[in-house]
Image (cartoon, rainbow, N blue to C red; front, side, top):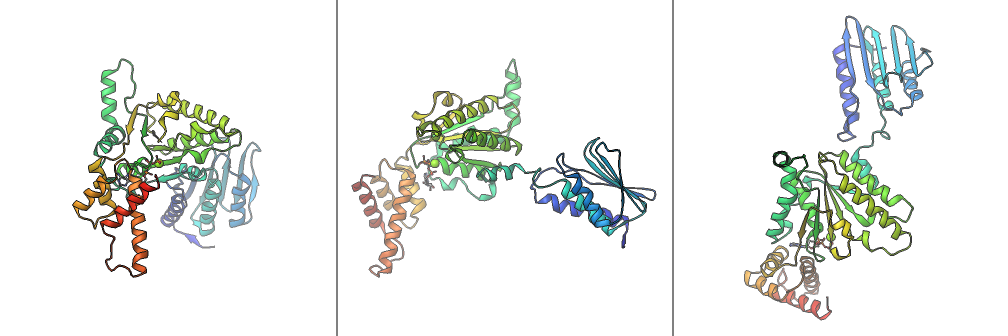
Length: 401
Ligand SMILES: Nc1ncnc2c1ncn2[C@@H]1O[C@H](COP(=O)(O)OP(=O)(O)OP(=O)(O)O)[C@@H](O)[C@H]1O
Ligand SMILES: [Mg+2]
């Protein structure tokens, strides 16, 4: 059996544990404490409440070999071999302790790391991120690289979002200071729930990703429809699970997209479910703790269909209007950079009343048609000219969309 000097023992165990913990992305696992007093080495770590003690003990037996097994029969176990003892304790906190006179062997180090992993298994330490992924929810992070450039124009809307959502998250202390100075009884003045409303295709969903990109705060993106199921009780359990996991993330934005799916379903089974989900949502908004850092954003293009009780819970409402003339110029510019200012102006004039999504569709349509023209060699220019876009706009109008 190979003996390992103490300083290496520490290094091996610490790096082994670190590597294991890393895969759980931020979850706090018990630390392994390693000590040397005189000749005695002792190692101590916590294990999960539901850990399988038989398996933990078995790791030692399998890796180290013969040992005597004893204990008081009240949940503690003692393994004795050579000059060493291992205690597996479930009475005074769940922990494992190995103490030995002298240096450890590499087998003992393997056994400790093995027992640590089995005692702190993946199943019981599911991270909030894992729980959300299991519910089919996406998390957007700032490294997705989405910025305000994705939404052309809309300076007023961007400013409102900065004021209502981003600033309070980035400087909570200022808001708290004001509230402590002004209120008889302390209440947080930070908005807890913000509503994004406006016609289809005006950038509400896109702004979720932009906010995640700009805020450095994870954005839990929940397409409401995806959590609705016909199974009794499941939809509201899903939603409650989303809120719990999000609040375990610490700072988080929860974006409930298309919350009108809560208002519309007349389908049997789902009708009842929507009522129950709605009530979970209302209770959640009401119950947000003052120090709960979660901010909820709800998006809808059918505010009129939403339950008034829900609408009244939103502190702030941001309206995504259809783009005006200058904004249409800017949006066209995002999707047809080859065109001149005059061309873009012309397109904007011809496209009154259409949304950013429509503009994007028109541009994509023009590009596709141009590509097939090129392939048939009817054209020699690389990029579609103004006329192509005008044709697409005209087709759109004639089809009444
Ligand atoms: N101002 C804009 N600038 C650039 N692109 C835009 C703009 N507005 C919308 N778009 C584009 O249109 C598409 C649709 O936008 P988005 O899905 O965000 O709309 P929405 O408001 O969520 O619509 P809905 O109410 O139907 O869900 C996206 O690809 C987006 O990039
Ligand atoms: Mg949307």
